[in-house]
Length: 147
Image 1: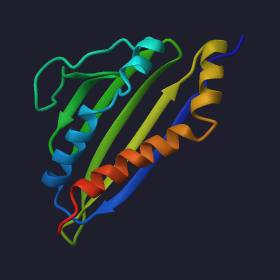
Image 2: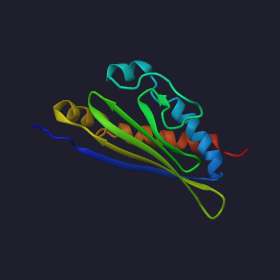
Image 3: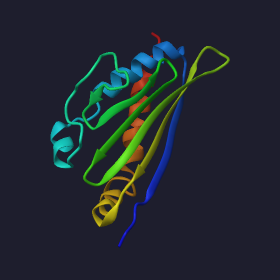
Image 4: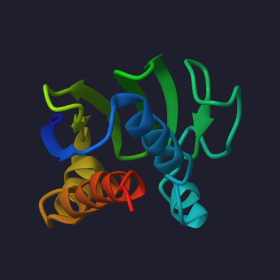
């Protein structure tokens, strides 16, 4: 029997904008997670629709995730479950001395059983997840660009 395999990753970038501006860009990007919608249904995500209060706060739902903590403009914690994994995606915003913000996207996931191991091979070990997370962080940085 194959047991759960942990996966942990951090993607980060320095953004030349204050935390409140970066926070709004993070919220905007999280609202579009779970696309394409057919994928969320295909893998059996527990959370499949946008629900709950906006702006995002504890109890809000976006496809693939539910918000378990929102501490503006410092930390947003998203949890999710589907057929092959349980996972947490945490965005941490750390102000720097120059008025900018370090944005970190922390992933922590488990992939139980043989189906989880196969999914991990396809999504994690292939490098797709790192690419997707890097893309989110990059889009946040671009949304906050001045000029």
